[in-house]
Length: 119
Image 1: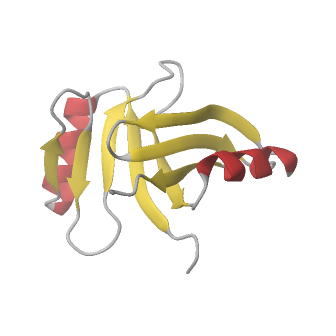
Image 2: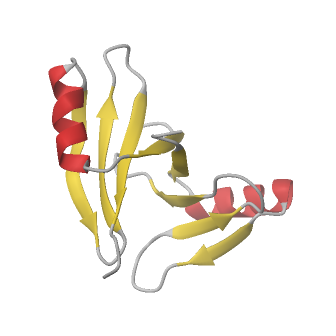
């Protein structure tokens, strides 16, 4: 598959409560990233994810899938040309890669992810 789902992120108002629930519910392993307010989720088999404080306090909690692309800037521009709304423009995650968040023309949100290649 050329553009697989690579990460699924929970954006929540209550990070501690969400981590406790999902760890107990599915026995997922939670790992804090030093220097960031971000927790990665190891699920065993399948696509892992993360948990973070919802950046939009008024929004309800939601899961956001990320899709792998070769060029996040070009893919974000393409999405906009196809009628999508860019909610978060291309942003770098230091030493990891770049992402953007998009809402498609029907109102469904998703993220694009480009991994930083090590040299």
